[in-house]
Image (cartoon, rainbow, N blue to C red; front, side, top):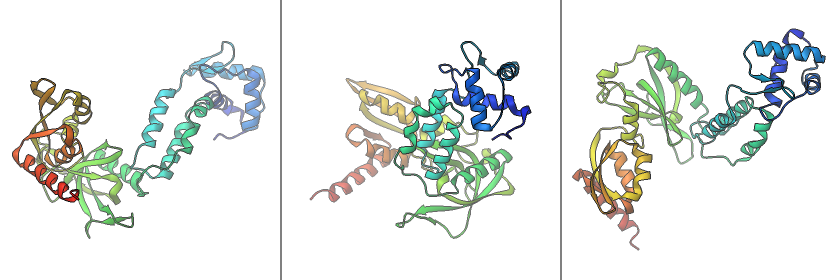
Length: 328
């Protein structure tokens, strides 16, 4: 990481050793630091130089304790924050297994050996159902740049075939106005506008390939149906729980009080309890109709859709079709 044998780099080498081998519960003696400088970097050093360089680091603002040995007390991320970052990578389905391992190793590099000892099991986890699209991370980077520069993007949008590989949905690329990247159910999605139409569309980024930024400026949000007043992200995510595109409607449903945790998990606090009858409650929520159809089927034994009537009829047809399939 650093050039060895260069005394001008001594304070940075000592800082790296403190980052790696010390924390608030583990201190290093001057002799420990001298041995690690020699072992890791081939650098000779004496006790006086160790102390003077640590003092120099403290003057630079590093939180280093010199009582009963040397220890780095604070760093860019504490252990809990690093664990959150690692878990976020572990359970993201939008990056490949190889990329996930690489990111986790980089995160571990920010921590001490003592933290890494506690998360050593991470490298032995079985592979999750991740994307096989190795372009996904690069797509994220390109889309981020396009959003920042307010430029349109083009990409090939794919579905997964029976060979478990990506296959283009159309012969020609999609031209899209990108507005926001969001995470939902372990996937990254782009909220944007398919340039041919005037409504909101969602695209799974791990299904995009050959993503490129165009010179053409994006369509202003106020020209997109549903974004006339800008993007209210919490409201939008609550209304699009499965990231389906299309309009949202007022939905009335009946359920029980013990479903409140699930309701809050899916819809946040953007719903109203409009009636109580014992333990049963009726709620009003604004949600994408297609998403609500699948949500109601998922929670079928515990939920009854009351309105709108066309959704209630659709669910009745779904249930009858399922009954036919499982009747024998």
